[in-house]
Length: 261
Figure 1 (cartoon, helix red, strand yellow):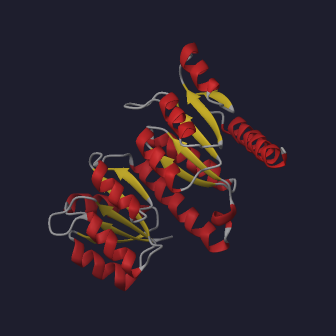
Figure 2 (tube, helix red, strand yellow):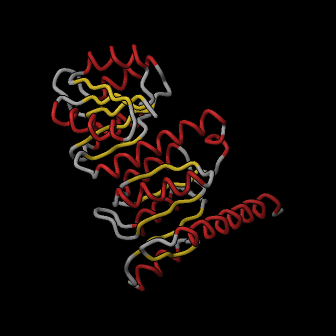
């Protein structure tokens, strides 16, 4: 499988992650502080590094910065206890692969790491550079992981965001062709996210996910140019079809704009 480096100042977390990931066939290295972690990274070049954002001697941002100096494309997943916007922005600027909250289920953790490895494999064959980019925005880690895995297998590039501000920041880095968006999220709901995306001149498609039938909210979202509204739990095969139709529609609109005198 993969060599994974776990960096956390709590030995218990290192021990638990080593046990869980080893059972899935991974070779797991651990370090409790930044400098030994960097030594291990240089010596073993792990496929994935799980990196605690907050550590006493050298925080995760500085470790990530030095990892980038060694390997600009290394896959690094940040472990966080709570959202720390300023630090997360720094990590994103340094190209962090993903964020995981401490305390997520082991199934979610393993699924997310499997997803990172699949994306690495696609990068080696060039698929990740050519596939249409889809952004999945949902506050449920399990659903993000499921949709990411499902869509990656079908040849799409996939990024995920757990809330509205994170989604908006990702779109500024690279515009996706399609956004799959939960309508009900804490802090900023899906309507507001889509409204701000349109204000930023986002021209791609959007698919809303909802477990509710709030007609006013649905109408507001439809007025912002949704491809479709889908209920939860998500019908994955129908989602795949809706994405294909949505991409075709956005391609047609682009073509008509280019050819209109």
